[in-house]
Length: 234
Image (cartoon, rainbow, N blue to C red; front, side, top):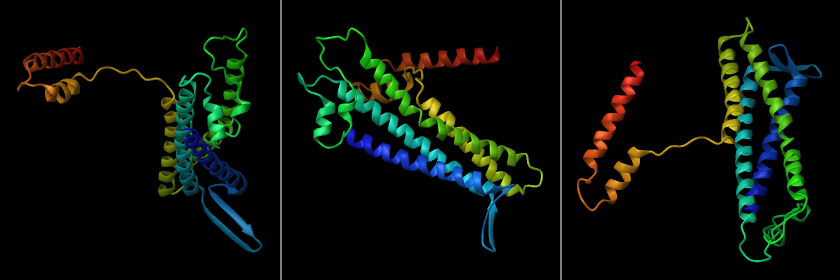
């Protein structure tokens, strides 16, 4: 898990660097509805909508890299906190194997027979997590900045239709990326999928054909459909 976490960190840093580089390009070279650069007597320009639309896809990849990183960190923490052997430390083991170079700088208490009088370890771990997450602030701000630029392009009167389509797609991509990160890290409610359990699991495992509860399941399905129809009519 330490190996996967290190790779996820590298991928996220590379993806974030691309987004920040795009920000410097846009903030420095955007003039009106175009991105232009002049070198001596040569001037090169391109529609800003196309560049921003492509950058929006890069921003989407950055959010996926962050989701991958947060999952890898969560799984590693779960694995490290498991008590496998008395006196065993997952962080020290990862350092010996060459994956956790800074593991000794992170406090941790793995002895179940002792408890801290003051929860300094938990407080320090929470503060360290906040410092790590603070790196997301500039990346998210850049995404909102790109979304605002593309929204302005959509409201521009003299912009060609194709460029407006590109701006709309880019704006939708960034909006979806921000919402996707929020929903990915939010607990969602679940309920039993009775239909799959009954007809694709229990029926296949039954020694009898048809299943003894087949008629009861069919009646239950009809009753639920009838109740849903009544609620929709109301």
